[in-house]
Length: 60
Ligand SMILES: [Zn+2]
Image 1 (cartoon, helix red, strand yellow):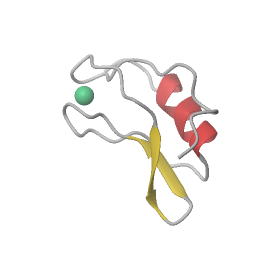
Image 2 (cartoon, rainbow, N blue to C red):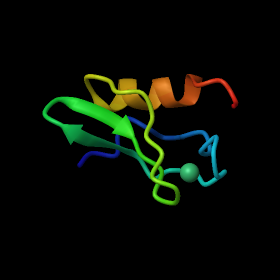
Image 3 (cartoon, protein in one colour):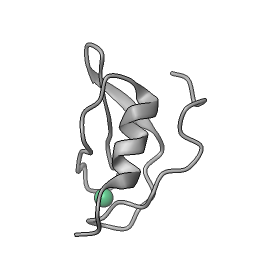
């Protein structure tokens, strides 16, 4: 797994923990997953995009 894409991820909107990175949840489907509460961010085609979508998510 490359760490090049996401240099910063917003804290999880549900538990406030900062996720480590986006992961490949399925073939060519990436999402940021919270290690603490297992909430999953928006799916995207690559790691960088998944991180962008996670960071763009409005506060709940
Ligand atoms: Zn969380």
